[in-house]
Amino acid sequence: MRDGYCDNDASAALLPWYDAHARDLPWRIGPDALAQGLRPDPYKVWLSEIMLQQTTVAAVRDYFRDFTMRWPHVAALAAADDAEVMGAWAGLGYYARARNLLKCARVVAHDHGGRFPQSEAELLALPGIGPYTAAAIAAIAFDRPAAVMDGNVERVLARLFAVQTPLPAAKTELKALVERLTPGTRPGCYAQAVMDLGATICTPRAPACGICPLRAMCRASAMGIAAELPRKSPKKQVPTRHGIAYLARRADGAMLLETRPETGLLGGMLGWPGSDWAAAPPAEVPPIAANWHDPGLEVRHTFTHFHLRLSLRLGQVAQDATPARGAFHLRDSFRPANLPTVMRKAWDLARDAWPKD
Image 1 (cartoon, helix red, strand yellow):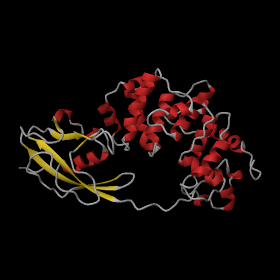
Image 2 (cartoon, one colour; image 1 turned 180 degrees about the horizontal axis):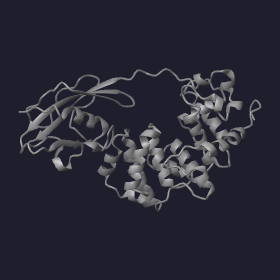
Image 3 (cartoon, one colour; image 1 turned 90 degrees about the vertical axis):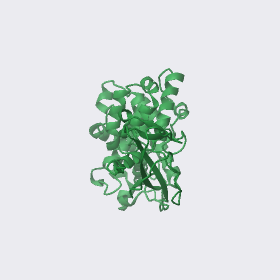
Image 4 (cartoon, helix red, strand yellow; image 1 turned 30 degrees about the vertical axis):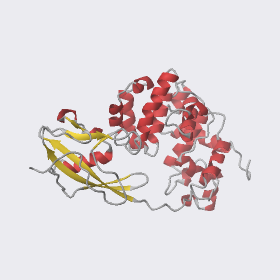
């Protein structure tokens, strides 16, 4: 109890609303199906949560369907070829997630008999699973009373309790509220209900307070400041880095590509050989002898912590030329769609700009 607010009020109001208004998501077992005895597939819950990290539901739907058609269970994903999985992930970004996805699938398949552990502590020990994901899997897949807190939950709780401390400093306070409010009954449905409320009603801009099931107990709504919360600390300026990508093509149409180091951005993925990405424009470091052409093209791409400006160099190379880095991929095996987004952008810009000589 806090200032007359009973901790079970939220679940008492939210669960009937969720039963009537739950989003239809391809990885979710809805309340009607749950009532009929169906249970969530932990593999699909885990896969969706990894895909949804820093990505929207709309962006994830097709990827999720593609992945579950190709690899319908964790053992199938564990046995998949790394390059095929990384190619299927291309476009979702944050490629460390894809590398950890494979690592986690293999640990679950080999060390846990193909079954995901149910406790948060055991889930946290798996590759690529942090506190939020562990709590989400425990609650949604196994109906454990785990405190699930994503951006939607932060927003709902900040408004419900009129928490005016700016994010990210408010996270500790909000986490304590989530832990306090998580019910012992239907905790998986409750977690999804709060997320659905934030996604559909308690939205970042213009929240629909008039139809919110929590309006009667929402302090920010009573104070007329719901749209102002949660407050956020000013963002730091995002730096810009510069680089060069070299696109070399042989007479037979083979393209020169290299596998990036396992660690770092785009780790383990195919890409065009190039320079380091640095604050100042880098020196030329061509990976093979060629009559290099500067078409004046530049890829602009934004990662989480910096903007990238990637200048392109195009070159036709001799059939017997030997690269200092990378290897040639024959025309029939070259799949631009399997490249990470920034590398595919380079290909899209370059393919009609190749020098004729």
